[in-house]
Figure 1 (tube, rainbow, N blue to C red):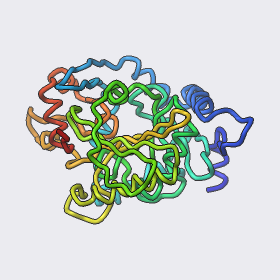
Figure 2 (figure 1 turned 30 degrees about the vertical axis):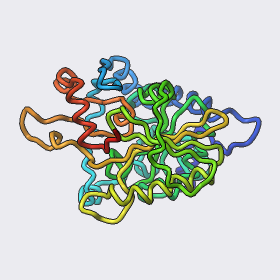
Figure 3 (figure 1 turned 180 degrees about the horizontal axis):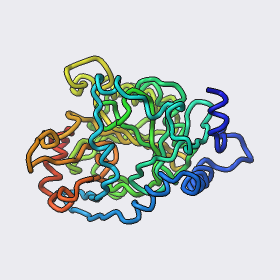
Figure 4 (figure 1 turned 90 degrees about the horizontal axis):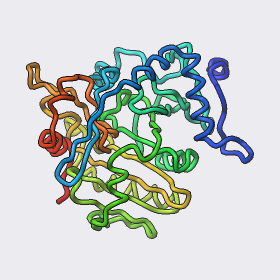
Length: 328
C-alpha cells in the first residue's frame, strides 16, 4: 500500500506553517486532475450543462438540479448483501489508475469526486476500510472544516442516509454558500432552544422551525466541547431514530460542518427514512430522488428529467415530511 500511495499522492497536507492552505491546494489539485483524468474531465464538461430551477416552498426554498450523471449514486444498492458482492470503490487499491489524492494528516485521502454535484466537489476517504460513522470521528470532521477554512463546507452522509459506500468511512467537501439552507439560517432569527439537553457548557444546541424538515444547529469555539455536545445529541437522537430493522448502529442523520475563523457550525438533519416510498415504485409514479446531505441542505438532485420537470413545492414538502423529522 505504501508504494501505491506514494505513486498516487499529488501533495501532503499536515497543517504546517508556510505551506499552501488546504483550500488552495485542493483547488489546484482538482484543476490538475481534470487535465490528467479523462473521466473527471468529462464529468465537469457535463456539469456545465446541468439544468436547475429554484422552487419556493412554505417558508424555505430548494434548488432542483437535473444531473443524469448522478444516477449511479442515487440508485446505489446499499444493503449488506449487495455491498459484500462488490469491491469498495473508496479503497486505494480499487481507485481508477488516473485518480490521485491529497494525503490529509496521514489519515484521509482527499479525492476528486468523479460524479460532482457542484464544481470543486471533493470526496474525503479514510485510508482504512472502516464503517461509516461520524460520532467517533467528530474531532477530525471539525478539524477538516478549520483546515479547509470558510471557503468550504464538510459533508457527512449516514450509512442509511445517502452514503453510497456505507462500509467505508468518508466525508465530502463543497464550496460554502451554495446550499440554500446555509443562506436561510444566516438570514433567520427564529431559533429556539429545542434541543438543550447537552451537559456541555459554552456550546449552543438549537433547532430552527419553518424549514420543512428538522434542522439542528450546534455552534461553539472549542472542538472537544463541540464534539461532546454532538455526542450528547446523537445519544438522545438514538431514542427516536434508529437504522432500518431496529439494528444497532448510528441513528439516521446527515451533517455539515463549517468554520468561519472563530466558530464552528454543525448542521444536523435527523432522519426517519432513507428514501421516500415513491423511490421503490415500479410504475410512472416512481421518484428517483434519494435524499442525502446535499438534498437535506436544499440541493435536490434529479437524474431523471421527468422528475426534474414535474417536482413542485407540494412534492418537495411531502418528500421532506416523509424522510425527516418536522419541528413546528
